[in-house]
Picture (cartoon, rainbow, N blue to C red):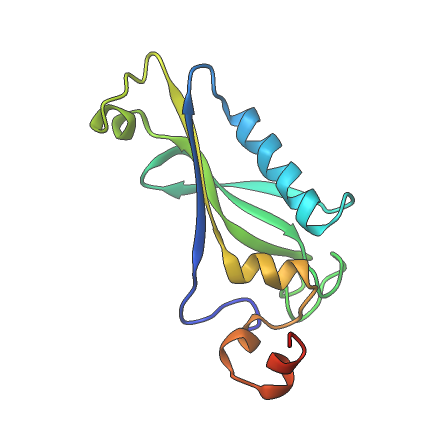
Length: 140
């Protein structure tokens, strides 16, 4: 469909330090989205499961095709998913030599195509892989 491809590329972020909490992650991701997509961009966090974080969340932003009104691109929801995020699970910290009683961390992974798709207000993510000369020539 217009929001999915058979493959994707991902950008990831990780912060491990003392006194890090979910509010830091939400603030950083909201700020990043507003820098990339504009100050009025809506961002939401939906609970989700990922094996290396707890709690985990899907991060969504306003659909670039309809501005949140609902369309074919967003299946009428007004939102598109950028990726997943959450607080690094204490067992993961322990496995890499950190004491989870001293430090915590957050992590995220966003699809690069999703970021570009949203940034440039595209209506179909599949154009990145179709090798359409008209699409490619606009970036020359």
